[in-house]
Amino acid sequence: MDDLIHTDSGNFDALPHTTPDSFSVQIQGWENEDEDEARTFGEGILECAREFSRYLDLSRLSSIVIAWDYPEALASIDVGEAMPAADRTKNEYGEGGAMSVAIKKDGELWNTVVIWTPLVRQIMDADAPDHKLALMTFMHELVHVEDQRVFDKTFPGGWQAAAPRDARDHAMQTIVNPCQSEYSAQRRSAHMAPRAGFALLDMLEDALRDVDAQITSERRAYRLHGNVEQFWTVARERLRFLFQAIGYGLGHADYVASAADEHPELAAEYSTRMEVLAALPKGWLLDACREAVQPFFLIQNWTNMEIYDPLEDVLEQLLNQYGVFSSIQEGGLYLDMPYNSIAEL
Image 1 (cartoon, helix red, strand yellow):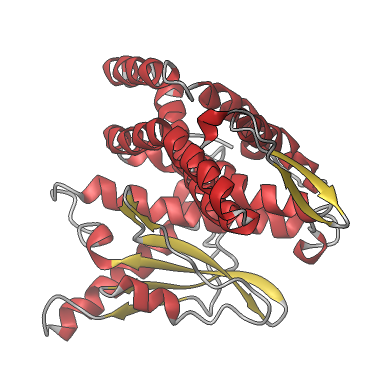
Image 2 (cartoon, rainbow, N blue to C red):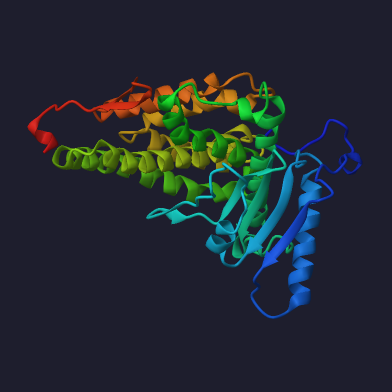
C-alpha cells in the first residue's frame, strides 16, 4: 500500500468512482436551524467520498452518518444479525468521534461510517484551521472501508470463513487487531495533516507510561478476589487500547519517516519523539509491533488468519512480563498467574 495518493494512469479524473449507487449521506442534527446549510454540507460530504472512491475501493460503503450526537448515532446503526455492536473508545485518554462500522446486509459485509460533526465541519473550507485535520479524519475512516473490502474479497472462502483457531486465538486477536487496522488507516491518511500526529504520540506516551501500573494493580487485586474473569475484563480493555494507540502513533510516525525528503524538519522532530518513547520501559513494543504489522500493511491478498501470529506473540511476551501466561485448556482460554512474591500483595 502506498503512503501518498497517486495513480499510475496519470489521469486521476479518468478513474471511475467506486461508491455504489445505493450509497447515501445522512446529517443528524445541525448547529443551527438552517436546513439548506446542512443539506449543502451533506452534499459536499457525499461528493468528497465519491472523489476519494477514485483511489479507494468503497464499493461496500453503505452510508456515511455525520451526527452531533455521536454516541446516539452509533447506537442506532443496524449492524445486522450476529454482528458485534459498534463500541466507541471512551476512557481517560480520550473519547472516540469517528468509526467505520462493519455491518451485514443481505449476507454481505458492508460499512457505515459514523463521524461526530465537529471533526469534519471544516472539511469544505480550505482556509479553516482544522481543514487538513478534517480531511485526515475522513480519509482515515474510508481507508478502514477499503481494508475491510480487501479482506472480504480476498480471504479464501470469504469473510465468513475467517475464524480464529481457538478461544485463545480469538481473545488475542480481539486485543491486537486495532494495532494493525489503525496503523494502516493512519499511515495512509497522515499525509493530509502530517503535523497532527504529535497529539497521537502524546496519547501513546501516556498509554505506555501507565500500562505497568494498570496491569500490575489488577494482578494484585486478583490475589484478593480470585476472579480471573474480573482480572481479564480489565486487562483486556487496557491492553486493547494500548495496541490501538500504538497503531495510531506508529502509523503516523512511519508515514512522516517515509516522506522525510518532503518534510525533513518534521521527520527529524518525529524521530526525536519516537526515540523518547522507545526509551520508556514498554518502549520495546514499538519496534516489535512495527515489524508485526508490516504483513497487514503490505498485503494484497489474504491467505489465512496466521498473519496475526506475530502480533499475538508480542502480546504474549507483554503478558508474560506481568506474570500472566495464556494457553488453551478444555477448549477455552486459560490464564496461569502463578504467585511470585510478597510484592504482589
